[in-house]
Image (cartoon, rainbow, N blue to C red; front, side, top):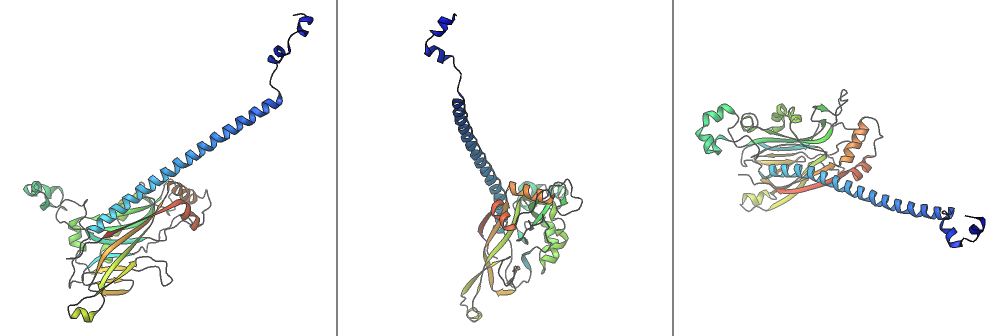
Length: 336
């Protein structure tokens, strides 16, 4: 193209071959940045929402397992009322101090032992026609198949249930301890021989207490507390006349009141002792089970604190951000 033709080229054609100006590029980059930022915000919010839902599902599942199992046991609790002085239930604060990561400990840890008709007990020989017909074979296969009543013990522990290593052990490197709930069911035969008819259930259970750590139920349970609704005769004079007026008292096993943080609850055949007070002609009407479950993020934080990789948060902040609380009430069967 000659110089003459180039000078005669229309301005519109020359503009079509011109590149973007710096201002246009900056405007385009700004718009692109806004769009990318918006997409990232939406993605982050979606990830946070998904993470929160997953945390809630995980903690709810752990709570459901713990609450349903314990409530089913309380619903089938067995005792005999009357003049017997046998102990049928013991609930107390666990004296075995649970040492967790610094600043992350279990403030409410109840240990309880009582008698139940557990649905997962060893089957009784008399409960099945086929077993009755093959009594000798059943007895040979499992000598503990006699009886319907089992003792069950609950307690919280901080340990690696796979490697069987306590969380505070010095040689726990490689372990991954968790705050977990353990449920120990004593077979009917041992229950009958060693625990039923005991006037001190706690002392009788000591020999089995050492095996509690072998009976893992569910993980990430940081706290467990029990509250009993006790109904008792309000007036001995009226009771002597056959006119019994009942009063009720709600007693938590562990409380934060200034008078003390433990109210040991003991149920005997002829009385109930709760917080040092003896209730005659009394019965437990209902029980409330409350637990605190740690989220998976909270469990990971506790592990980082244990390994010394992160500073322990303040307990109040940890409980507020990384835990969920659940509770359930259940009616307790009345003694025969």
